[in-house]
Length: 215
Image (tube, rainbow, N blue to C red; front, top):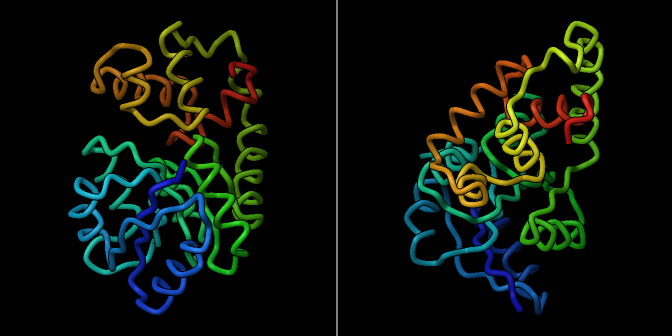
């Protein structure tokens, strides 16, 4: 069984080289290439990729905006970010919008292929530099937990279910399908979860939930 992959990067030579590299793996099928986010959005309905390998810094529509639009459109493809940048804001924005893996462009071919396979299975992977940022954020949040005892969190049973699915990397659409509720209801639950856990986004909610023993 092969994994359908769409490569999105605004650098033609890098994009072509990456496609050539990935095409050598019998378990991957490169279904298309896009030079920016808008082109990606145009191609996805026809190509139906299972994994999108996406750069963050692109013209027309950047990576974070592209991920957001894909999720709004209900695209089920898993997102693997491959970029030269590891700034905190980009990392957390991409993860918050639904990226499942985040690698830098100096990653080995083996790491990239492994990240694609893992993403197709719903598992995430972070570059070491990104892992450090997430761990640092985890530590920062842990220092604030004394002000938020478990008994005072107050998540409902349904909110706990949403939080646990979120922590596994599920998208809003996937959460809605698994819990048999509307996507709009999922968004309302997420808003309540973020408020009760005093966190700004999905990544921080997962980290806080794990620290509180809710997952």
